[in-house]
Length: 105
Image (cartoon, rainbow, N blue to C red; front, side):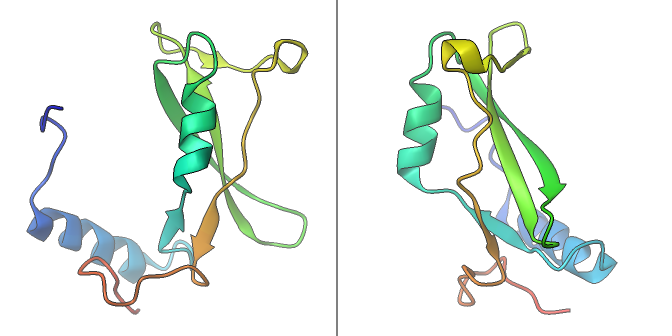
C-alpha cells in the first residue's frame, strides 16, 4: 500500500472546514459501507471508482458510485451487470461528530 495520495491532517481539516463554511451543501461527508466497495470492485475490469453527486426527488443528497476501467472510462452497462450504485449514507445523520474533520457551520 502506498501513501502517495495521503494528505496531512491539517490540510484535510482546512479543506473540510472550507467546504462546510462555503454553504454549498449541508452534506459534510458520506459513509460508504465496506461491503459496497467490495461489491463494486469485484466487477470485471474495475480498476477504480468514480463518485457522482446528485439530489433525489425528495431533495436528499446522493453520491452515486461507478466502476472505472484502466483507461478511465465509467463501466455502466446494466445488461452486463455493470451498475450505478447508491449505497452511500450522507452526514448529517451518519456523522462522526468526534472526528477531527467534523466542523459545524
